[in-house]
Length: 357
Ligand code: GGG
Image (cartoon, rainbow, N blue to C red; front, top):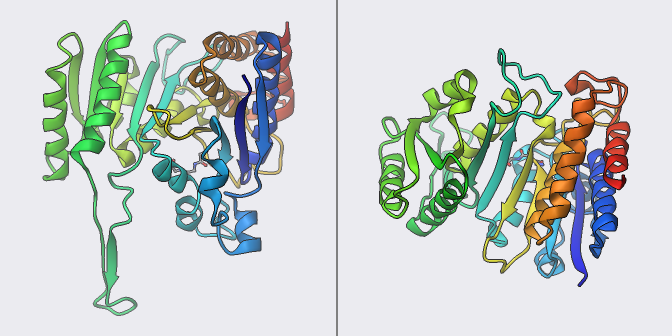
């Protein structure tokens, strides 16, 4: 059975790491006899906006809805399109219209990479952030009054629905239950944000009744971020709102040495719509065009995509391959963010070669 993948490199380093993501997927597909058909799209990027005045064509939903998955790079080129315009015109549309309500972001200290935290070794940091992905603080509800005057008022509402919060909590509890430590941490700020966040805590309390074997911790986001740095080994599955999950899933990988390796899966668990796989990092204009971006975030996202599509063995082979290359630590192959002198391509090629062995 052919599985159809929509490939969207996006902006900046997205266009540089995507070929390495595809190289790894092709090597894994060959090794495990998987039939993947890649179709490339030039929208959901700021170049498309420059030509068309919008990030995507009007019929983007129909063009993409029948794919088995979407493989995305990065979005954003603030010199030409304001970041909120590029993000709301592309990635956030995918997440919302394809109801990808889970954003699953593993955070793992990999062999050969030095954590900026003292004395941490692989195994010490190994947790998931489960980010609510379609509502919360990322809402389009709000407005401006008296714009441009000194009476100017701006309002943006946080939107939390029982349906939306319960389904992400259920996913996070299920994930925690499936892991050896069976531990769930919920991120809120219920002392300061006194309506939505205490209500989130109540939903966690209610859901925990169905999972007597899962231990539950609740933290305010401020001390939780401190504990990510001080005690990353405490965490197993961390669940949070759209904004808190976003922040935690940049901070977590930073504690593992580089955000360049962090993958993510934007999942529609029911499979009604395609799920989307992308590195956590953005388009990184500061290093774009230099060929030095770490491709592992894209490659690992490809592994998550394969697992989602039912190819767990091939997904594991990709992870094993990049872990082996990292463990060997040949600095001439590794990218500068992990203390190497290599390029996006040297690291991507080494991983694909290892996969082919
Ligand atoms: N590859 C992910 C990407 O380009 N992210 C850009 C970004 O700013 N994302 C914000 C978000 O994930 O909500």
